[in-house]
Image (tube, rainbow, N blue to C red; front, side):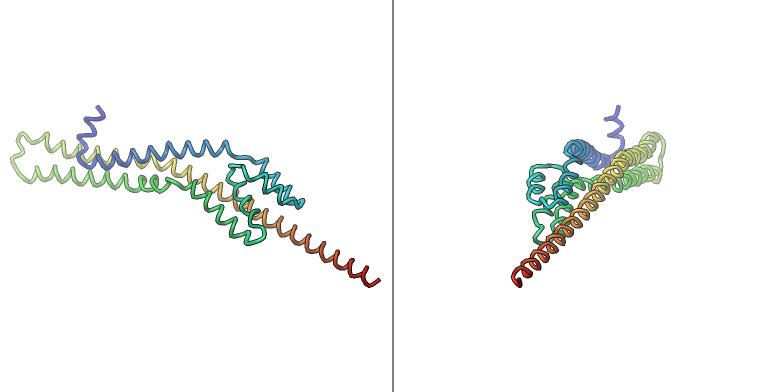
Length: 221
């Protein structure tokens, strides 16, 4: 039944079929990816890293985050690894790398949302052209089936094209929301880590000044 309906949709149905296959493959892969990533999340480890950094135990914090697969922990670990250099650049590069993993495949869904209805519209145009060409040729007797077939072709194509777009748009919005949520979490964690590192560096500088002043006083005596 579906196969016969597919054939009645005309040649434009083949690009729509390819688009639908690509869409379903991306949907399956993205849902599997989010399920895997949700199992990798480790909020307790993120808090532990902040506590270690706050107490100046940078090396221990770096060691604790090295083996983690939590994306936020990975970003923080990269920042700690470059604490003596450009922490902001390291955090930004690591965050972009993680977000690229979350954005993977979304361009296919975005294309399906736009291209599906356009392909359906193209099928509508070709189907109507076929029907009108028969009408314009005269001698309609016995050609009613061909005329209705052209109209059916146009309706079937646009229906399938819209179906692909509808199937893709809801998951696309969901995945985009997940990307935005992860981006906010990484930004908040990165900002907090930078503040802790600055506080730790400031505290170390103050301690060195006090130690230098005390040493100078002892030398004067």
